[in-house]
Amino acid sequence: MTVKKRALITGITGMVGSHLADFLLENTDWDIYGMCRWRSPLDNVEHLIPLANSKDRVYFLYGDLNDYLSLHNVIKESKPDYVFHLAAQSFPRTSFDSPIDTLNVNILGTSRLLEALRSFEDLDPIIHVCASSEVFGRVPKEKLPIDEECSFHPASPYAISKIGTDLIGRFHAEAYGQKIMTTRMFTHTGPRRGDVFAESTFAKQIAMIEAGVIPPIVKTGNLDSLRTWSDVRDAVRAYYMLVTVNPIAGEYYNIGGTFSCSVKEMLDTLLSMSTLKDIKVETDPERLRPIDADLQVPNTAKFKNHTGWQPEIPFEKTMGDLLNYWRERIKKGQSFLTR
Image (cartoon, rainbow, N blue to C red; front, side):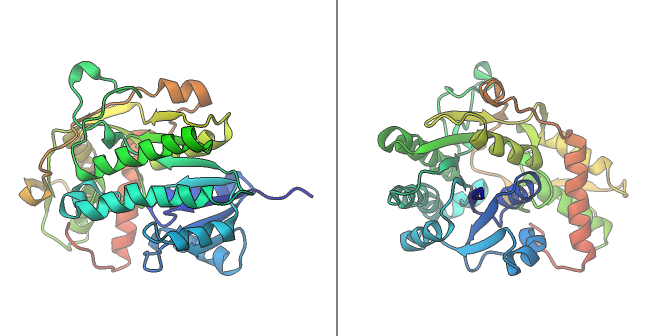
């Protein structure tokens, strides 16, 4: 009898973690162990709760990156063959308000997790450490598209924390022989995207305007930033291929989409999908970052050549699905902050 593989997803309740769980359930026979904090909102994994309640391939384990013993217990319970380390303080704007928490969770939390994994001599999982394209920060035009060797110029405490995450992962692979690969995923979005991110707050505001909840004004931050967009469902397929297609310990990859446009053009796309045509746009100073990573265009040749991955979901579908996600949530009568 073949023993089923086990995957541990830290941050399973986030947008990416929940979509990764969906992908693995549909495309593998692996058992899924999702690490979450006791206070984590379960909105994104609500559809998985029946499986978890019946202990059918999905198991939720309580753990916190700030608590080494809890991480040790999660690993002891899950005995993973694959680890997808997605848990983080993941909001760049929030990191300006909570820089120390961001650095602690993302840098020291990653160190705690990798040290806990290293302490089990009978385990040797393939580990994905998720950094971010934000590590590159403010990139001059002559360095576009951004390849893996582009210098780091972080534009937020979050970006600094993800540089730490990236380097700790690569260090553990080199120093201790752990099978770790790090990724710098560029902008990825879709249903379940947190409403502190630009495209999701725009979609949420449009859905609230359509429902008559708020006046017909979308409030924005910096609209000039250029982004290359990909769909979260393409992103999690990339993460699966990362750990299953000839994984090489210590490697690091830029991953992202092929469609680039400004934040303003992204907003215009969402507005064009609205049932209302008289929505105004206003800049809200509170939504502006002190500095911004404004040219986020990746060179993803290294990852594509290694795995054969290609993004498949078009930008318009991603935006339409995101807008419909918010329409459905607001239709349920839930109240939301107008952030």
